[in-house]
Image (cartoon, rainbow over all chains, first blue to last red; front, top):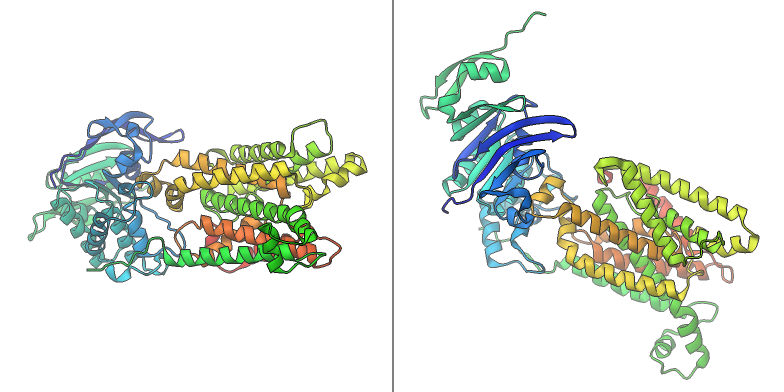
Length: 266
Length: 337
């Protein structure tokens, strides 16, 4: 897959009703790379991701998909370019994993177009990649949190979009499944997909992302390769905690150690 | 490799639809043959195909019973379809037109034209206007969240109560003859229908079914949250607006034929859902179940205490209310939200 599709935000301001959550943000997702959006709770990470995915229309500024205003493009065309896995998901009662993943093919199907060979291939690939093959006939409401999350990831993968946005894809997962999902994300970006994800765990972000966007109070305060931008000062500014920084001997990615929060006396 | 056996269309749903179709057909045949004069099914078929030698049977079937059964079939299907659609749009199984006051408002408007308040519009038009008014009001009161959440339902409940009260006030103020003429409207009956309103309903239902065929994929995606539906490329606003419009159209036209037989819209989709494969909105099955249910309820109303006739709305209420209580009171309430 040759990365040709680009997604960028140009000076977007995002508001919930009258409350501005993110102001004047400009980001460009590096093609075929993994971008991690990090920051404290309520800093506007998810809002930015939803803005990029056209779920949340900006009150000013534009989101550009291949240089064109995403809100002016036909929504189905966008759906073939960009998939989003939201943070919280509800599915119809009794829906099976197979049927859920099948919904991911919807943007590629026309009116009354039956399931094609291509659809089946994408389906099989997504199911294998997210390792939900053995769950295919199970209703979602009978699965564990981790299994359910992987089923949703499979649906997004089945959409076969060059751009993939994930909102805390590993939040419900145990360590093993977290690693599995991050490796899947690396694998997908290796195939040429552009990925952006909101991640809470700074260590995972450092380890698995090529590019990092650090946000605080609705503003991007730092952006760049994790190894270059993550520093005790940044951690202090983002989370209000002190720490020391070492590098993982195996991978070279930054690791936070001796993390502590000074309780301020009022 | 995990191959997934997809069957198109899905087998379980297909079988469910066939079973419901056969049941509805059986209900129609039974309803045509039973009444004050019993007519054998074979004779019913001869009368329908115009090959009978018995002018009496031909008259009873074609002139007296057929119109009523057709009215029941059409209004049952329309109400159930409207119910299933609105439940999906609102993502709440209680959000049927009957519960959120659309039936009551349509009735109040229709009664206003029947009791001679000086509004001379046909009951069909009035019922439609009432249904639309209630929906717009429920939307307005629910605020920016639209069909989401319980606010829509609470607003609808209030509107329904007001509309019901308005109907009662009108009935208490007019001459007894007018009140009698309007009575079937208040309980739901297939007695007060006019041929024009049935024809309009048939037309509206045909338009609705065609539109829903085009919308079915989008409607299915609305079972997910808004972000997921948008991600899948659904035009959310357009689908909601069209779906709500169709729901209002079918409810209004059905109410102009049979009055507020609201519980059909709640029961039929529920039955359809339990029969069909989960995860898809069972539009076809709901329509078939609603049609059959209405015909059976009307048949029971006509024959149980014959010659005394019980309006179909009372029968559906007797059958439906315990069911409504059951969904409200059963331990798992996750299906309600």
